[in-house]
Structure formats: C-alpha cells, structure tokens
Length: 284
Ligand SMILES: NC(=O)c1ccc[n+]([C@@H]2O[C@H](COP(=O)([O-])OP(=O)(O)OC[C@H]3O[C@@H](n4cnc5c(N)ncnc54)[C@H](OP(=O)(O)O)[C@@H]3O)[C@@H](O)[C@H]2O)c1
Image (cartoon, rainbow, N blue to C red; front, side, top):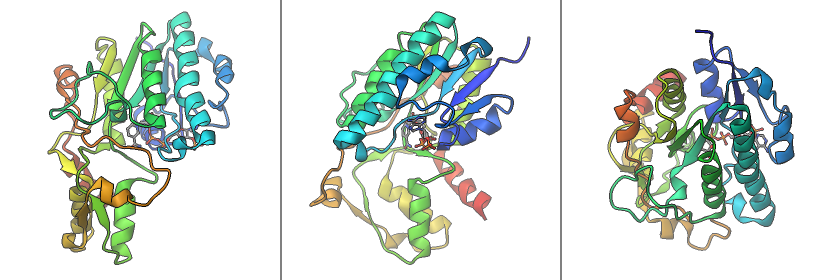
C-alpha cells in the first residue's frame, strides 16, 4: 500500500518537532506557510495532495489568553481555524488528527478522566480548546488525542526547573496540581500508531504511564537527575503560588488521564519517570 501523504501544521512547536522524526516524508507547515489566526487561510491548504492532516498548532499561552488580544488569537487558532479544518477535512474525506488538553476538564474528578467525561473548561485557553474538540469530533475521520503536561524540544517546565537548578535557585513549586508528563516522542508515536493500526476513529487520551505526581514532585526529580539536592524544591499550593499575581488563568488541580482506551489498541506509553531520566541523558 502506498505511504499516506501527511501534512503537519504547527511544524515548529514541541510536538511538531517530534513529528519530524516520526513522519520523515511528511510536509511540514509553520506559521509562515499557514497563519491560523486567519482561519480563512485554511481553505488554501493543499488538500488535494494529502491524505492526513496532523494539527500540532495551537495558541498555548494559557495566561496571555486571558487578555483581550490573547483571547481573540486563542479563539481564532484553537477554535475557528480548527472548525474550518474539520469542515474541509470532512468534505475532502481527509483524516484529521488533532491534539487537545486535560484543561477541557475542571480538575475536580477524583479518578483519571475518561474520553467521555463532561467538559468544564476553567479559562479562556481551555474554552477555546474545548470548542476545537467539538469541531473535530464532527469530522467523520478523526483522531483527537487529549494530552497533558507536554514536554519536548522547546520551552517547558522540565527545562525551566533544570535551568533553575543550574543557577542554584531553590524554587517554590505547586504541589496540589496532580498529573503525568507527556513526552512528545510518545505523543508522536501514538499518532503514528493510531494511523497505521487503523484504530477506530475518535478521541483517545494520551500521557505517559507512571505515578500521579505534582509539579513539585517532578521538579524534585529534575533536581536529583541533574545532580542537585531535591530538598531545594519547596511545595506550595496553587493559591499560595499565584497570590497577588494578576492575569493568571485558572488551572485544573487534577489532570490524570485514563489511558485504557489507547492501551487497548496496543499502544502502551513508557513511564514518564523513565522518559525524564533519558531526557537528561540525551541533553548531556
Ligand atoms: N504544552 C502543554 O503542556 C500542553 C498540554 C496539553 C495539551 N497541549 C496541546 O498539545 C498540542 C501541541 O502543544 P505544544 O506543546 O507542541 O505547543 P507549542 O510548543 O506551543 O507549539 C504550538 C505551535 O503552534 C504554532 N502556532 C501558534 N499560533 C499559530 C498561528 N497563528 N498560526 C500557525 N501556527 C501557530 C506555534 O508557532 P510558532 O512556532 O511560530 O510560535 C507553535 O509552533 C497543542 O494542541 C496544545 O494545545 C499542550
């Protein structure tokens, strides 16, 4: 069977970079090739020459999305452009792969979120991502991967903590937001797996496996893995951390995603602890 022709949007983001290794023959579009803040540009994408579109682009500035300018951009990129993509993918019978977030939930559940759980997004970014999910779910041929706490090549929490450790800083880190990391190599591999295995279309949760942990737990592991003392990390509540700061988007406290559905298709992600250890060994 001929290789599927794949177009990736969001080529230069954390996930976009990981997709380059997983889909070496794909065509990659960044913001220059298609600016999704102008959703009408979506109709100019080369639909005739692709079988699959993977949308790794998103407006991901969670706090900036609370400003009027940020909200307008988040709405355009995460909702309106995705709606346009979904409509055109359906018309052209193209497979649409899209990525969403645990932030569509309010984080009040006490067990891992299922793909079918009710949305209750807390902030503007989250609301626009939820709108995108509803749009993608209207395309008959879609994979919607809902993920959490993404770590890849680029600015992310793990890099920030490693930089703080290097500078001898003893940070306060939130200890009441609970979840699991998702390394982009596993997210990209999960996308490849769903496409290649012809798994049933629909929504799939995807994070790394491993224990439920707080950001403070993860920061302590980063300190240890980089040869620093984990007791330098002090845990604080989200409320304490953001006290007196303006323009902060609310975050869900519970971000655990149930992985049973994707694991039943044969994709078992590595544990985030193993990935975190190899993340630093690769940077050496
Ligand atoms: N990061 C997380 O912790 C997290 C958690 C859960 C879910 N997710 C979801 O996972 C997916 C991938 O996230 P990521 O961490 O890879 O994000 P990222 O590193 O912030 O990358 C997002 C990409 O989207 C592109 N983009 C933004 N505005 C655009 C526009 N107007 N037109 C075209 N492209 C635009 C950016 O382009 P530039 O490079 O030009 O800025 C960037 O390359 C997203 O759907 C995100 O919502 C992320």
